[in-house]
Image 1 (spheres, one colour):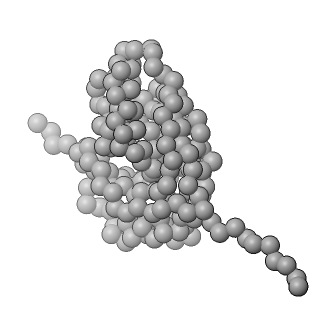
Image 2: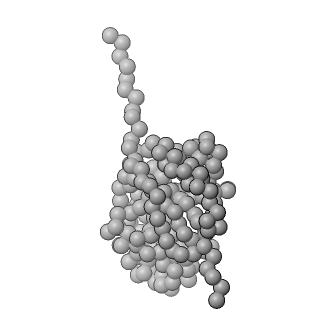
Length: 188
């Protein structure tokens, strides 16, 4: 038997609350998705992602750069609503109906920080928020395609995904805090 190919992947994401994640996972099962489902504990909305590294080949300095980029996130909390299901080439995705602008503000902070540190995100990557529900595109049910799962996003996480092992490790969390608004100055 051929050994599994394991790769390291890192991405910035937002996580639904546990109860919402459980409801999303149940909805995916009710859609008829049976194979290669993403479990509730691994559901996330990807905001920014790195290239993949062969297991053990990611330089530790790169991970430190990702952590420093996370420290530069200056964006307000925002509402996220999953609106619809899309069938992609390799996966079934939930896409946001609300929350794109809030997620884009976070993405812009990360992308600018990474570019300033000369450590790019995924080559050719762009802002494309999504939540993968399944890696099996064989949808048995045509129903339940509309979603309405909503939550308040109050933090961003950096996840180390061990591709091939179906493992996620949260490396750090950063709270979203509205940037200070400029106060009007008055001459007295």
